Image (cartoon, rainbow, N blue to C red; front, side):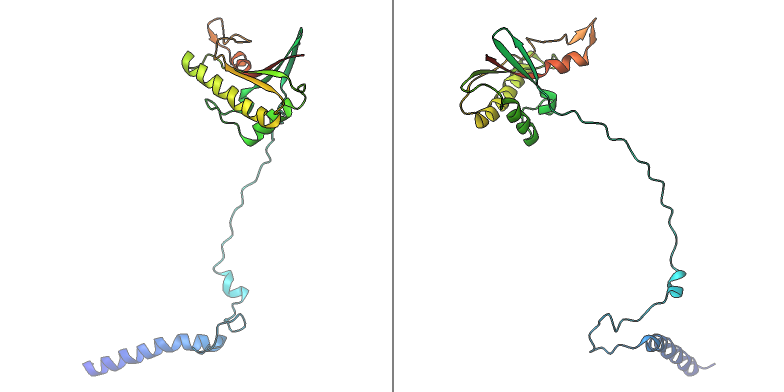
Length: 198
């Protein structure tokens, strides 16, 4: 076979290769270059043409989960003689080690003070548990009391507020029992109290 005949065969193969797409497009309806592409001018594909390219997938079983009941914010109210103490658990109001109230926590504080007597003098006192240093707990308790007092002042401008923090110095429950950690006690100690005379 001569070089010239090889070139002729290669040219013929190239022409045949280029002609195949034109035949396929011709079968589906050729689109001229200057025609706009629309839904009506797109080539159609049948289900039988697609079936060889579609694989099934396995969908795992989905199990339902139980969502626990969420306790609503309920301040503890204790009356002792001529004084009332409203105790706000800080675990509900603040993130660990922080003194910034979320908007829902601000709403809870506003709701808790709605029933306080008009023009009352209210002590806002922050408390912590014994985790961390005395100095850090003192600062945190004061910042939390101030955050709560700021909301109270916005909601009830008729109240006179005295803000302080006692850190871990005045627990209502022991932070430890028998030398062991007492998480339930520590939880009760993390609080902001509102104290006012009846």
